[in-house]
Length: 154
Image 1 (cartoon, rainbow, N blue to C red):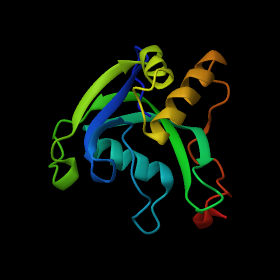
Image 2 (tube, rainbow, N blue to C red):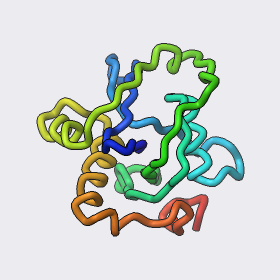
Image 3 (cartoon, rainbow, N blue to C red):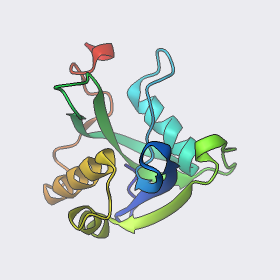
């Protein structure tokens, strides 16, 4: 989750074929580069999907979407100290028509609670950021915090 100095969340909208709609979500991606650390993957995805880089990275939240049926683990990073990259990433395929929008964190929370944001990672990330802010950001963990629940990092 990218959060600017005005506490706005960076959301992207792209078409998601399995649900047949354009969905608003946080920039995110897979750990699909062998040996790449999770925060590097998060930084790569932020650059590829939204043309931003961040000076600060923290772990915001970890979760398992469906531990009864899948070993999939998620980690949401909080990226701050944002800066636009001078050269836009050449987007192809599902990324070709990405729309980028900045939304105040409080509005994003309202969108979650009124059913206007649906992506599970976005819902979890937005609510975690809201809770972390309420605690003065004291719950943030270092970007390289252990992640023993993820099979690749045990």
